[in-house]
Image 1 (cartoon, helix red, strand yellow):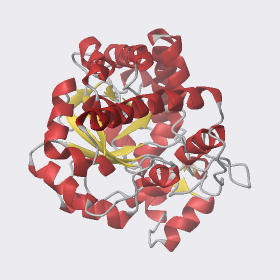
Image 2 (cartoon, helix red, strand yellow):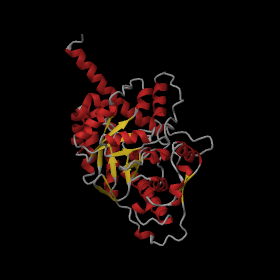
Image 3 (cartoon, helix red, strand yellow):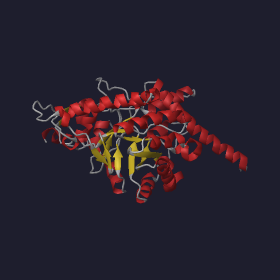
Image 4 (cartoon, one colour):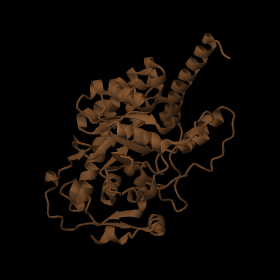
Length: 374
């Protein structure tokens, strides 16, 4: 039996370990190649290269009048774009989150924070999260907690996380691939759906997001049934958290195999799979406005970007804003060339699905021709 001082020392070590892990992840993501590896044919693992928006030679609209505005979970956005959940929980992440949030406020888009577990364990880490609402008072902001941590923190922890940010919604992330590879990972996934249902019953708008492995249709339907407000597919094709943990494990002298680097459902496939009649975020390898347009044509309501913004956030808010401005301009061009005068029209734009993405969707029972013939 541990005495009081020993117990407190152990608790403090857990708090410090969580915070250290946050900055380790940032260092690896900015210094290593951690994206999903290309397929054998050179196309991206996200499947987005298998998609072609059908060109309209006679768009019959004025590009300057294209309307990018949309509503997501009751909040108006100036473009269908979110800065995806990334970081927080360490003093060195404060400026990163500040710069991301400043860009979100200026551009009128949404932003999510990284897992708030560090701040729930250690109140001194809250500033790296609260800064987001301070500098983005009008933005759509969502908090973040891991599904694996719900058993410990429950609805009360979710409410504390919401209050920390004055958040508009709460993301519950599913990262069991990462947990399985992480030496200190939590691999008890029993009862997760019930825990999510309890949070939803509290009336909090809940976004369930994967973290790089995608979500299949059957799981999307189960999430809808328990009251989830939106899904973020976060498919395979962007940051590989198996890859991130590979570098952490190797650095610690361990020998984690790389066989799970590209594990998961490709983003393009998961967007179609999760078209179950609820708000949908496409993420996982979104690298341009054209990628955004393709995903919206497949059924997404908004798109989210993470990894490309990390280094830019270290540089400053202007670098983040410049990148996102280019993405938004590319999206507008894609809408113009597909004769889509607004986001709703883009959802009806013709899109052809080829290659491995088409093969996977066909085997999963989807008729891909409906996207090209509408």
